[in-house]
Length: 80
Image 1 (cartoon, rainbow, N blue to C red):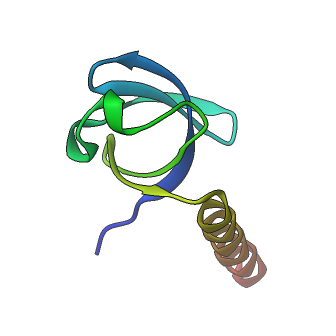
Image 2 (image 1 turned 30 degrees about the vertical axis):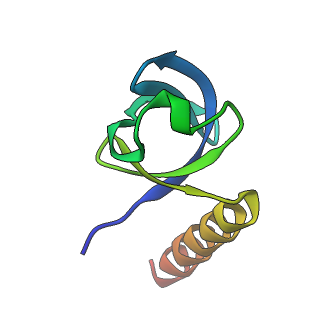
């Protein structure tokens, strides 16, 4: 099983790289699997797996995914 985390592109840093905001944590991400920087824009939401953007998603999809992660973490905290 793999997991991809949603983030928002904050700036394009090269032909195949972008800085992505994961809720205030910024990381450089490869855009190679999406076809490079020409295929995305600042403000786009992407799913990232092991440093690679693997899909462009809507803001709504990103929000729902983050909410689901938050629910899982809350449930886990209740078990501890």
